[in-house]
Amino acid sequence: KKSGDSVYYTLKAEAGTTTFKPGVKTKTMGYDGSYLGPTIRVRRGQTVHTKVVNQLNQRTSLHWHGALVPGKADGGPFEPIAAGKTKQTTFKVDQQAATLWYHPHAMGTTASQVYHGLAGFMLVDDQNSQKLNLPKKYGVDDFPLVVQDRTFSKAGQFDYQADYNADGTEGNTLLVNGTLNPYINVTTNQVRLRLLNGSNARTYHFTLNHGATIRQIATDGGFLNQPVKMNQIDLAPGQRAEVVVNTANATSKNVALRTNGQRVLQLRLHSKRTGSRTLPVKLNHLTPTKQLNQFGLKHQTISFSGMGRMVRINGRVYNPDRIDLTAKPHTNQIWNLTNNDSMMGGMDHPFHIHGAQFRILSVNGKRPSAAESGLMDVVNLKPGKKVRVLMSFHDRGIFVYHCHNLEHEENGMMGQVKVE
Ligand code: C2O
Ligand code: CU
Ligand code: CU
Image (tube, rainbow, N blue to C red):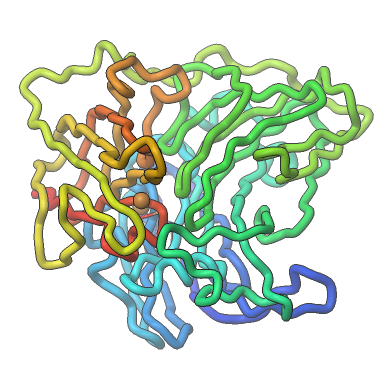
């Protein structure tokens, strides 16, 4: 279909069982299935009609993480879908090609529903992404990979209540796309991995071994201006990175994507790999950081502090009836994001905002690295860190910003901005 057309998606949030370990049925949740959900593919200019059917016995919502949609279609915490109910929304895709995702966002059920499996990808394409000479055969040389940590109880179940940690629920077992001990068959010299940290609270530090190289091509909101060679990709909860792995000089038939010495994913290399070994020099035309116009913009200070049930933004706990900040649609502001926790024993707070994208202007007063210079909707704030961003608002509506450590978010580390 041409851009300007309509697409229709129905997503059923449902409970079921998933076999992660042979012979064990783990109780899980998924969209149109028992764990995770379908990958939704849309193109810039399309009108997307969605219908979310809540077949769970608890409230839910469906939030399009990273999508620049009106507040009414955002699926944030204000409009939960009661058990047994259905909600329809419509939005127009009005942003660059990017790897986005969707997940529930109703207060009180977000963290446990994500933990049980409610999440999926939404991939946006545009003219640029269709033209660029990049790996783009889904499941062949282009893989969406959601990385999550879970703990299996002795009975092979996810016991969210038992494993709950008010400072972020972390598991001891890694799953990629809901698979234990995952691998992909690599038949080409270059493969594109669309990495999503879909964990409640854990941050990953991805590396590759055996001479395979990583070039980052996109951040949360779209392509970088050029591929950036990386030794390590750090992803906080909610963050995405698109990378191209070049295996042309790999010294082993089995390359591993790792985090902190643990294997995340095995890349099984075919002996005769085909296809391009190079990447386009130019991927995008984002304004360089130092040329971004900051003149005359409104400034906001957003400071994160606290741990456990005492988490706060600007000293306050989330109140759905309070508007914390305002902005005008299609305008920019400067946001000074700070983590006020002490560098000793404080916690990371991955900042995320709905319905907007930002560019990093500085990190602790220094210019961002090339890989930090793209379009973002999540940035990790380590204790004591100060990140200054150019925030670009889009459509009208009320949007939340919050810590994407989902337990912190549920404990009220969230505020809201009204764009009108
Ligand atoms: Cu990933 Cu408020 O969302
Ligand atoms: Cu979001
Ligand atoms: Cu936090």
